[in-house]
Image (cartoon, rainbow, N blue to C red; front, side, top):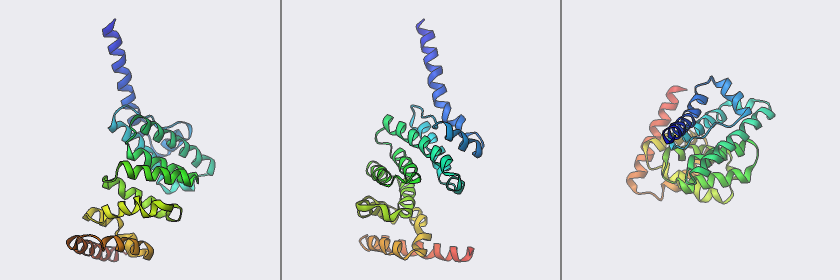
Length: 215
C-alpha cells in the first residue's frame, strides 16, 4: 500500500512539474487563448516556476497583447497575476514573480499595485542583472508613475546595469535617444569609480556607432 501511495504521489508531482512546459509548447496564439481562460500552472520547483512566469512575460511583452481587445487583454493579465501570486506565495523571495505581477498590474492600469510589486521585486532581487534589465525597461515606460521608487530601487537597478558591459548595452539605445534618461544615468555614472566611468563611455559610444550603422 505504501508503495502505491508513494508511486501515486510521485506521478502527481511529475505531472505538476511538466504542466508549465506543456502549456508553453503550444503555439503563441493558443497560449494567449489559454491564458484568457486559466493561469499558467506553477509547479513546486524554481525552474518550473520560472517557465510558468516566462509564459506570462513573453505574452505580455508582445505588441499583439496591447493591441488585443480590452476584455481579452484583461483576462490574460488577471491570469498572470494569479500565476505570479502563486509563485511568490510558494517562494516569497521570488523576484521574477513580483516583476510579472508588476507587468500585469500595469497592463490593467493598477498603478499603485504595479509600483509596489516592482519595488518588491527589486528589494528581494537587487543583484539579478537579467531581471534588473527588465525592471528598468518597465519602469522607464511608466516613469511618471514611480513616485519614490524612482529615486530608490530604480536608481539602484540603473547603477547595477551601468557597471557591466551587458548592462550598458541593455540601456544604450535609450541612453542615446532619451535626454531625460541620459541625465539620470549620467548622474549615477558620475558617482562610480573612474575605470567604470571610462568603460561606460566606451561601450555606449560603440553601441551608438553600431546603431548608426544599422540605421
